Image (cartoon, rainbow, N blue to C red; front, side, top):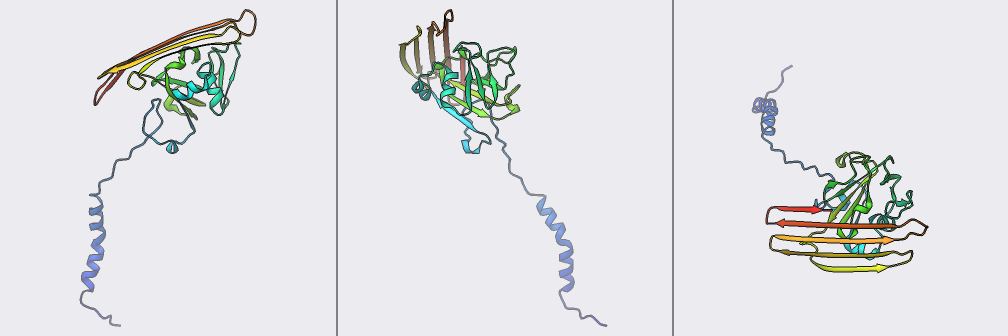
Length: 245
């Protein structure tokens, strides 16, 4: 049986056969765009919106801490942050065990630690036992803080329940001077002083506080002396901070 042949069929068949080769050559010239992977870091100011972070993040500012009139940072977290509680295992209000979702940050050596604490990006868990001494964190020096839940290897050893990131004040962000003092029951007296300022590219910030009390039990006094200073340098492209706690 004869098959009719039309003009143009052969060129069409040849074009069809060769088309995959032409398509492959065109695809090899494609340029893929850069893929940016953003993850949590101990530092503030990454510019990532909170709803894009795959975990619960609780934040607080210096104004929030001042408004609460808490005794220290652990007392503030207990009053204002969810899933946080404190346990006075050592019978001292300045050295509590802080619990967050069942994990602990404690000054008690030998306790199972599960929370990492950073100050200006520097880990401040004690080298021996990963203990956390909350009385060494001056409340008046805190500009902001983030409590990030979840286990994340980015924050280092024993970050099982979460990480606490603290950013301190400097003369550029908190200029001015202040003095605060109060007294209360059980012989509690406290005084705090702050001073900060900037001049062009340089700035300073210094704060100190003394808190003492007799305690609600006999023979249980406490006295805490805290000091923090920061020297800062800024220009259009760089920044440098030197802090002492």
